[in-house]
Length: 302
Image (cartoon, rainbow, N blue to C red):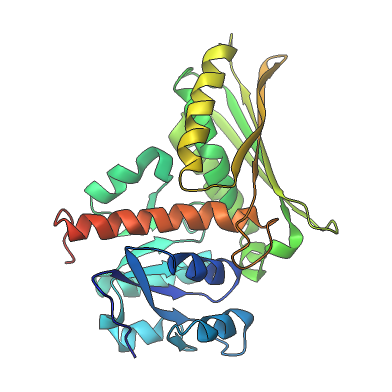
């Protein structure tokens, strides 16, 4: 079954966990994309049941549902695992699909919309990697600091998320999370050394997502750094409303310290799951840019 697209870009979501289900709900508010397939492996999963109640076509065949009916979508959100994405990309590439990778597989172009969305779209990237939730929070801030100081000795980011918001795939990909976040931090900030930490906090009630960024810089210009960071926060909040600067850049010895909180919209999990919002809102913004570009004729469907 294929839903009528009404001129919207047809998308498929593979993976019926927390990320995939939250992404589905967010996509249904879009004026530019429409979900024509929600695929997983278990029709009795909470995500599958939610998709079914929303009237979205579902399948328990995973990527096979797309292989059997390639016309069902133009763009695929892969919300499975880093390991599965390797197999999926080999298949979807042959089918000519554009993929927005929600896993830390690091196979495609590393993307942070606030930094390189235009570049990803204009160059027609077919595999766009959304890095990690912690990466989407911290990399824009690291980039903003690098716009003031190109020489950064070291950047460390520590993200704390509610344990309840981390599904099986997230837990299985913790090593990939660290590796991909650190690589992306280095790419976008130019820092000589980077370190990423993810804490799954089991507190009850669940804690909100918070990320603290530490940057070691020689003779930092704190006033310019604050201005650059505030400008970036404003830019990100346009597509992630819950993105908040709660500790402005502060000088502590030879380190700059700043903290971001991300509150979720409560689309699938409660407000504490800001880790879903930060990466999913970023992904939706990229899909909408691709859709608009194709509508205007600047990006082909081939």
